[in-house]
Length: 124
Image 1: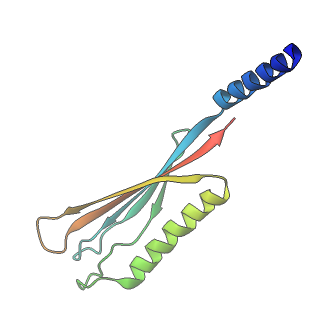
Image 2: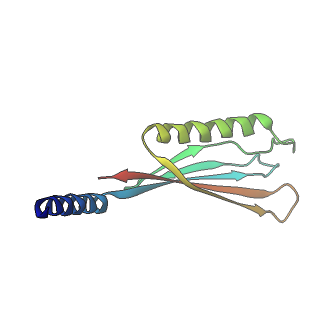
């Protein structure tokens, strides 16, 4: 009986140390979409990797120069975001949190849509 208790104690301690040895990495994907109709906007995606390196991906503005919402640009931007998130999900990352904010400009049809995707991944 004492041997069984000792074995269970050793196994449980081993599991505790293994659980503590695992940590998480975090990666952040930020999209900034401009809705300025005069210039069409200069939207971007910024990816910050766990090591601090960054990547910038060009996206399109939400409005066409004519002042109307450009559906093609919205579809293209959505595809860029979905493709990038799927790429990282397939690498074992998990989508941990999404937050967004909108900032209205001082004039009509100006503003920024800011979205941050936080991904995490367990490491040993």
